[in-house]
Length: 393
Image 1 (tube, one colour):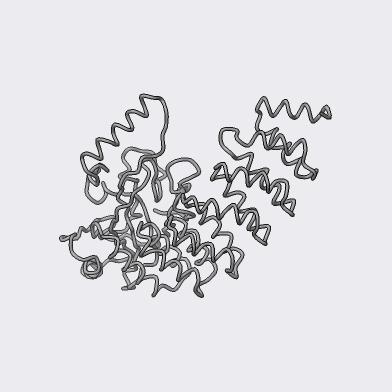
Image 2 (cartoon, rainbow, N blue to C red):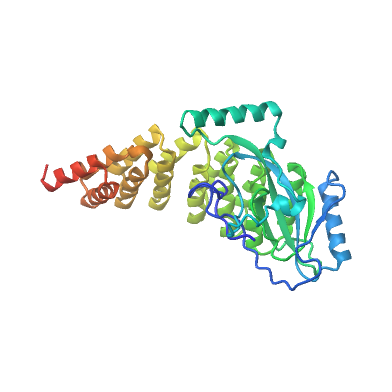
């Protein structure tokens, strides 16, 4: 049902952002049983989550499941209207059901999670955008996100895999039964997931659980936990994930933790991931910190990542910093990364800078990188600049 994940923000749905087919791989290893694909619904979904989970274990034992099974619940998350988190079934057939259809037998409109007044405002904003022929920022709406945990029928008390998916995405239970517990409040969901993390062994399942924790939009509960993981003695791969997920919280406390990690974490890979954690933030202070890192970090690889992140920010301060880096950084590779960043800026914003670098830069390697970028742009101004360079102007 699920394939490997990267970052939450790039969650499936729109272009390369919102993660190309983000989710977790589910190697089933299951033999057929009478309960194959069957969904069991908790009779009292308003009960405390911990009690519902215990009920699920009892239900699995009572049904005598012959293989692995899913236990799932949902949380609510404010997301872009056209963004999704999770996996998209490879089938395009209309017959492939969504998770909510598998569970409830019908689709549920997003508007049920917001007030009538807010739904009307959002509908009017969409209509206005269509009427004016423009595409505004993705409207934020409340969406239901499923947390699916795979357990072994042998009685394991911790999940061997965790998957995340919007309820409105197509789902495939891979022939395994699902015990569905209903909606959960963030606090009780986080308490349960953190408890499983503390007992988890394999690095992979810890990374799965970190992602499940990080999708909750509760910085006061999530940031201290991720900080503890990042600054502790966990394997490098787990701490790398914690750094990325801190950025998803888009919180000043998370920014402070990432700043400290970039300055002092013993792992270069963790420091680099902390830079990309900053890139996930919309805080103005995150862009300022990226500029500081791009200009002053000791290691070229860290500065290179900060330069790439600034290209995605594409603000006026970021562009000015890229111009300085392209000419003044002490390492050629970092200067070339600034060139690549200019080439990636939207609306041809980087074109004047590429032309300037191609014509005036003191380093032939950097000039050559800018010339190649101009050739790739196929813009009339770029072609004109290239002709002038050929003629020695």
